[in-house]
Amino acid sequence: MEVDLSKFNNDWYKPGRGVAIRTLWYFIKALFFINPLNTSSGIKVFLLRLFGAKIGQGVVLKPSINIKYPWLLEIGDNSWVGEGAWLDNLAQISIGKNCCISQGAYLCTGNHDWSDEAFCLVVKPICVEDGAWIGANAMVLPGVIVKTHAIISAGSVMSSDAEPYTIYCGHPAVAINTRDVKESSTST
Image (cartoon, rainbow, N blue to C red; front, side):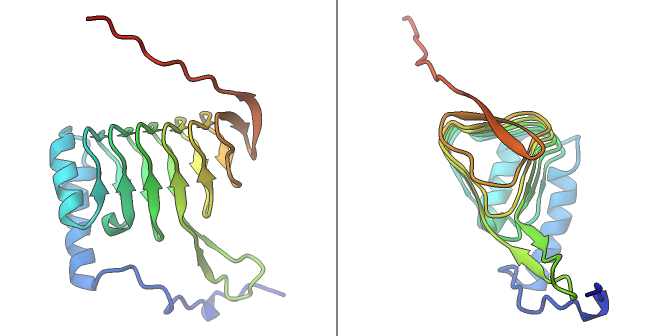
């Protein structure tokens, strides 16, 4: 079998909003999200909510982030998205509470079926559960669940589910250790 891209057809895929809303989002994204001069998380949170994202309290959104479709995004309380992160959400991306998506991380919900001559589009959601950390320049691929408090270390590629409290490293990422989370003590 040879790939024949002239047969590619993704008419079945519906991004969830019409052309006018998607076009408006692309302009807003260029001005307020990808633009490194906008450092305000508050403005970004407001705009994401305006376009249908579910964003918790205390969310930190750094400059130069790229979000494909805000209406397919959920971020829990006190989570961070670092500079240059790309949330390529052709399908739902759900990020829990107290998560860290580090700078340059790439969460990709879309891929192509390499075994199909038409190279058909395949989309699957990503879920990052509470307390998980996606390291700098790490990739999380379609359909992956990063379970509670798991760590995907810098530069790693996660193509299967990450178990709770487990640290992953490499390409493909493999479990290398477990994570102990200590409770913070605050004195008054």
